[in-house]
Each structure stands twice: as C-alpha cells, then as structure tokens.
Image 1 (spheres, helix red, strand yellow):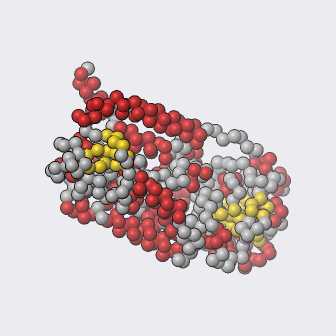
Image 2: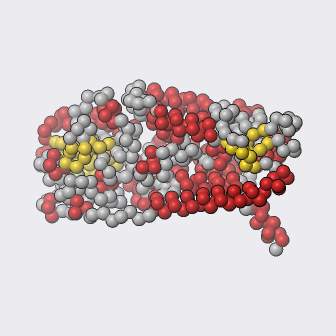
Image 3: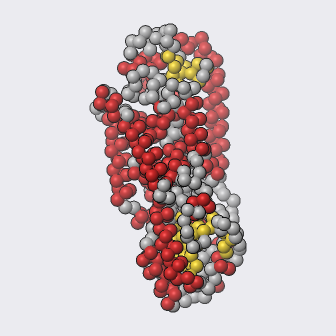
Length: 510
C-alpha cells in the first residue's frame, strides 16, 4: 500500500503539466470538430492564441500567431500587419518564452515523447550552436519568403507550407483521419509527403533530445526569446543571493547560458536546484513560487489563491467547451432554400470526385436540391465586391455557370484565378463565371483585386455558402452547373484551363 501511494505521488502530473494540458484543451475546445471533420470558422478565429497551434486543427478555436504573421506579411502590400505585430508584442512583453514552457501544445507533445525510456542526448556546444538555427528559419521562412512573394501578389506562408509539424500533425492528419474527409486524399502530393517526413523526424528527435523542435527550429520561440530581458512573467534571479555557482544552468535541459535568457522557457525547474533560493517565479513584483523550504509560511495563502484560480480556470474551460460544442439550431432543409435569396443551411456532404461532367435528363424541378453531381444547385445571393449582388437563379439562369471558391491567402487559389478569367473571356456570354471568396479569413479583397485586371465578378461568401456546396475549408473548389442549374462537376483541388474547357465545352455543344 505504501509503495502504491508513493508511486501515485511520484507520477501525479505537476502544476506545469496540468497548465500545459489545460492550454492545449482551451486552444482546441471545439471537440465536435474531430467528429465532423470540419474546422471552426467562427468569430474567435480572428484572435490569436499565444502558443503554436494550427489554425486548421479540427478543434482549434483561435488562430496561430505564427501563421497569422506570415499571412499578414504575405498581404502586406495591401495593409500593414499592425494587429499581428501588436499581439506578438503583447505576448512577448507579458509572457515571453513562458508561453513555450506552459502554453504551447507542441511543447507538451515533445515533452511527452521525451519521457519514452531511451538513451538521451544531453546538451553540449553543438546543440547550443544549433539553437540559433531557429532565428535563421524565422528570418527566411517567416519573413523573407512571404514578403518576397507578397511583392508578386502571391501568398506563400512558407514556414506553415514547408516545415511546421503542428500543421501536419494537428491540421492535415487531424482532418484526414476523419472519414468525412476521405475524398481529400486525392489532393495529397509530394509537398505533404515531405512535410510528413519532417514531422516524423522532429517527433523522433524529440524522443532523444529534449524539446528538439523548440530548441532548434521553432521561429515562434525565437520571437518570444527577443523579449527575454523585459517579459513580466517568468523566473527571475535575485542577484544579492546568487553565488554564480552555475547549478541552475547545469540543471536546465535547454541551451541556456543563464537563467531567463533567450533560450529559457521559464519552466521553473531551476528554482529547487538553486541552493541559496535566489531564483523565484514572478509576475512583475508578485512572487508566485520560490523554493519549497521558504514557501512554508506562505503556503496557506498560496493554496487559497491557487484554489480560486483553479476554480475560475475550470469554469472558463467548461463554459467554452459548452459554447463551442453545443448543437447548432436546426435550419431549413436544402429543398426549402431552393427559391430563397439567402444562404442555404449548412450541410456536411462531401464533394463528388467525378472527373468529367455528367448530364441528367430529369426536369430540374423534379431533382432534389443538394451539393452532389446530378442534384439541383441550391439558390443563393452573394454580395459582389465593388457593389451589387449575384443571385444564382437570376444571374446564372440559362447559362453554363462556373463557380470558383477561393481566398487571397490560398496559394493554389491565386495561381488558378487567371484560368477562370481566361475561360470567361474566351466563351463570353455563353457562360457565367463567378469567384467567391471564403469567409474563413476576410482580407482586404478589394485592395487585392485592384492590383489585377480580372473581368469576372468576385463575390463574398455571405456565410455558409461553401458548405451548401459540400465544401468546408479545403480550397480551392470548383463547381460547374449546366444551363438548368444542375451540378455536373463538384471538385476540391486545383484545376487548369484545359480541365475547365473540357468541362464547359461539352455542355455548350449539348
């Protein structure tokens, strides 16, 4: 019994581990996303969480600051990224790399992997030199490449696209693991394979090297490390008590030279290692933790405050879990929205993977309304950029209609826009082409389009429109309707001009 009690006490999660788990759950409070295979697109996605957490994770309820920074830089030709820079400045001044130690899900994953019983590589001069690599990645993949492509009006969030293991693990695998997204496997290419290999290598290295990604590769940690001298919350050293024995740096598994420098994640492990009690964990002038031997007189007060803080934190978490996972109110059926001029109710159907247009001999009025090939497309009204509206039953009636769902931040979307414009120019009044911008992130689309001379109309998704066509957050998506409004093609993924012409030409011949 005594042995069992001792085992339980030694294996209970520490306060820091509980905070890490809490933060990971808080960032990904939309648990139903793992069931539906859809990512959350509500208002809170405009807000950045402090840690590295993929925007496309099925449970994510906020944006990743690193992804937001890259997207802001990619569109910096249209607007200055004041919000993202401001939020990073706020996080850096208040918490700095304390975020890495307590509030980053990727840090938690690495620490859990490092617990696997294997030989470990201790820090040394080589790892200390490699710790500066993340600053190079920050400069090249987060800043330089997005800015370079921004000058060419081509968004490339390079770190997210080519390296980020959080994007691969939380976003890509999190979505692909759901049967509802089975059709998207056809979109995978060598880029995903490379990112998957990078993720495996990083996670594998974390088994043998403590926080390998944080120490060598993470540009978000590099940003927060720039605030190491001024961040308010974290470990602090009382110089009057410090004997400069070096036990704190020797005890730390990160590549620090001294407590609180740019490599320190403020985990607090050095507090108990200091023989003189010179190290404390503070929030400004408030001491939150010191050596246990000195904490006894204050233990009752600290316990009371921790109990209150824990109760408040638990209440917040429960409230958010209820808010983000409560069943949505039932909306009208797709059939009821056929003649409506407002966006139809959201559906969860998956786009058809039909590679060529199909035709139907049934009268349109006898067909069910939906998103599958052969169904009558749901009617909608979408506001146009520059003024006016587009109503499918009114403006697309009697013509072959091509609908492209896109976004300024989607690299494949931007690359294929000229194909749709060329199609409209070549076929003139015979067809109707409409490009609808995703509601997921509403950049300054007007300013973006002003840089080009596209002839096709551009509309804004008024809310839930892409879902009514069987899509979600996977872009681009192309839908082709015959002259009666029947869906003959509905596909997620990039298209070429030749593919578009092969879809449209047979319908015009008929």
